[in-house]
Image (cartoon, rainbow, N blue to C red; front, side, top):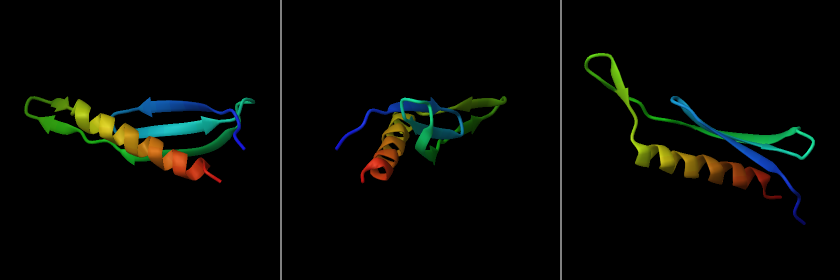
Length: 69
């Protein structure tokens, strides 16, 4: 049996987080993984888009596992 859900993504500097909501806006579950920041000289910071994307996939897969009954 499937049910409709809304999934939100917050791809932040420190965490990649997914939250699943029912259609009434109630939180069903969430999953997150730490994101990596590379600090450079001169107060600069960078992130690898490829690493961030991999972490988005990891976080989504974690949420998906939690939602499977």
